Length: 446
Image (cartoon, rainbow, N blue to C red; front, side, top):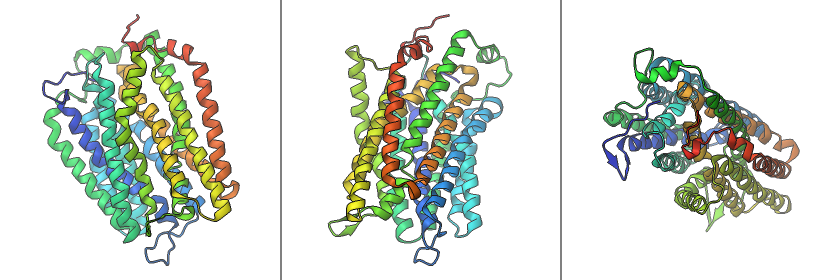
């Protein structure tokens, strides 16, 4: 992975960051637009005004779990293709083309087009997702203090797309036709691809394929890992287990919580019924409004000598996110009493989920670019997204039990499990930090 300093900067960051930012805005618009509609479309009655597949909740959540798992697992071959065949830049380009095809096919109203479209989206995300994140890291030289803030800016792009998509695609899909919503997601992805094409002049030297040339970086890629690099890989693999736990809880949003909003939440506000898909925008809205505050808090926390390592932030993020499920526990209690639960429980749950995510997710991306050996940079980023995919499948497995075990028991169990995992990481923090060999303090020990 290159660490090229860009001469042209915008607001103190390489211009290439904003090319990747806007590409990600539209890629996430397409993905979250489709995601907001996915389970609701599957459970919609076949003979309704806006017909779907007429599946049960558990069937819809199960397919959603397989789909989202495969979306992220495909990042492993996507990373391998970048490392061994095309480089990150060209693999992102190929991923964008596949995504344009996939979302366009989803706009057609047939069962075969739905599955075919999902297949192309899976391939496209696998090529684009791990490599565009790695390219962000490549914009900054080793030890550049702007790197973490650069990832926060990039993360904002993810969430601008994630905020707009459920409101626009969700409203059109729920109100008029599910496939019109899928079609809007396709238009968004096309805009993202055009943005990436236009911005190539700002990405010179970023994400290019090194191959077996005499490039100086190739000497690094061909040598064996040092003992320090092996230790760092070990702690990365441990962090991936935490990622599985985090997303296994967090991704109830697109499955169980999405259906809960549609079927069991009183969504009337001032005489107007709020579309269930709009609740999918809450996470991104809170990220956009709170990201700078949370990032600033951690900077101040570190400046006064408090613990602020990435592993610590991830553990705290898991704990805070778990607390959010206690609000869903209260929502389920209200439903048992009154037959509907108030909207504010969902809002509070998404608020705490978002605070937890802001503590854990952006720093985990930066953590990988700090610890991953250059030889396996894109492949390890692919493993990160694979861990995210396994977490999504775990989320579907847990959410699917709700029809038999009940939502209250599921939400409470998630809270308890997240609390236990978080406390375990905090207890083991010192030995885990030793395995990083000062990577986050820019200390190089050989």
